[in-house]
Length: 603
Image 1 (cartoon, rainbow, N blue to C red):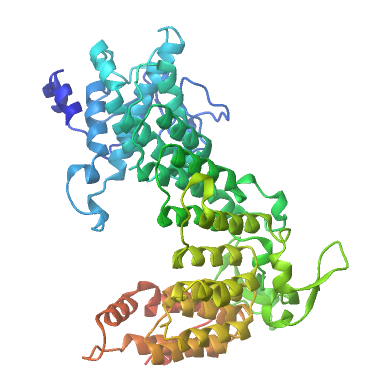
Image 2: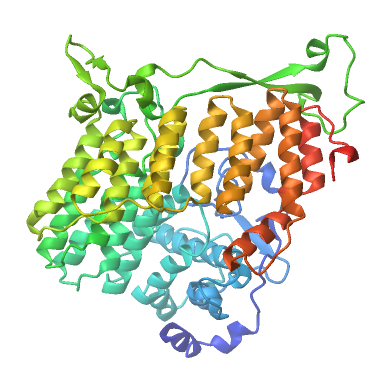
């Protein structure tokens, strides 16, 4: 509101005559007037300060140079006061249209936010280039120079407008890596200009942008700056700093090299030193440590993905040419439409099972046996081996960090770990392949501290067991879960089915889904149904695939009665209306694997 009122005193009425066109088509025009297609831009991997890249421009293309003009169908110039007005609008929740956080997303116009941020960044870069080039830079005709008055420039670079710009950037739905780069670039431009005072709100918004972008060092530095300036500490700033660690681990979570040891992984695999910095900053500013913040810190150890000890590749997907897979030498290209294609040729998709995991990965096979410690002749039980600090240094750091919190870490008062804390530690153990330690926490540590495991704790352990295909141990903990009166969830069914499919037992997986539905009125996610069908068809078990299709048809014919709960009715209605489980989708899936699903297969 303050920015809008200031703009209104600087000819806002003239600016508002030109409405902002959302999703307008931009064309690239050279200064000479010749139209240039975006794909015709020369590629240049080096980024120069006088260049600007739009959100809509692919990263592989050369950033737009300042001697290239962006023209709109409505206007060929952008005004500085219009940029500020659009930034303020884009920074509002749903652009000021109302609605609620849990309501429909139709009111959230991310394209408008991206367009507004594009224009803001172009103007900011123009001022930066003008400052570094001693005023000799040419804006290329995109920015209306007549709108750049000294008063308007001060308003553009004010703390309030900059804070709104960072908030608008967070509403653009851009990838984490791109958010990280833009936050650093903007800070570099603003710092070089030296016209934007750092305020409490601005520093908090910059901390949020760097936190969600995964800039850990910059987030920790902003915490120190806020401490040195005496800003009142808030819970949000420490949440943003912890979020920076989780966002930085996104790449490792998606692209971890499971063949490297824990000692050879990137430093983000063990975030203890950054967590200690956050705890020290909190203590120096007299901000108490809560169990909720401690759980967020513990979750950073479980947010970097799974190590090689926790996973195994059970199967291989093959694409066999039709003429090689057909013993009669006849092509089935014309027989089944929609069959899988590879290099414009029909192929038969099949799955073959790999050898099972080593016995020491499977708890049921190593139970009561001694395993040798690598590099020595010492033999230990598997639990004792996993309790060794050298089993997994990041896991050891996580357990030690949790113990330090209960004893008072970095000057804070001791806290008590709750159910979420232990569930997070179980997840950390599971991701490091320490299944015996995870079972030890669930069976002994939690009960000794007066905490009973819930469905989430059991599901986390079942997921870890499913990744190594330990069906006997999964059965034990599933029965233990039911014996304690804990109702299974869709994640429970999904985990057990995944374990059975990893072993290649498709029939048992189909039977389990039907039995749990009949006994507990629980269905797995729809992706589990598709996975069962893909495994069946990939292993040429067409009769098993049709058996599961028959079960899906029974779900189609379900009708509500007075004994069904509202939650169950909602689940069934969503399952019946799921387009991925429709008749057409199932026939298409069968055709992809070279099989037919005729009308005779439907009730």
